[in-house]
Image (cartoon, rainbow, N blue to C red):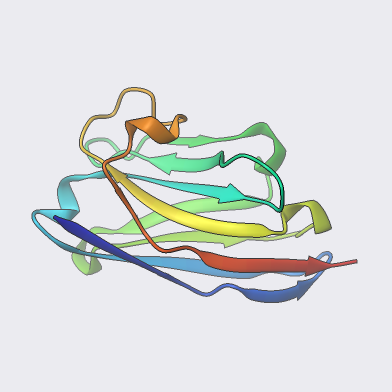
Length: 124
């Protein structure tokens, strides 16, 4: 089992910034590919960003490119999501997830473990 705990959510104004953290622990937690998803009110869970364990390849959904940055600190088993230039449409519960395989990291079904989520609210 891998345990994932997100933190760093909260309230921000449009144009502001937040940094989310996801601390992983458990079975070889540093060997997993990591992703961030979000789910807004009344919406399906959507992919935000992912980073692979092997080569550090990074992927973003188009709506966050140039504004969000995913990174990982393998020594701390922690993944970060730096969110800049926030918009009200970024309001959602943000989830961290871990995948054993690197294929299809844009799809939630690829992931084996999930955190409990952290709320991000962006006011206009």
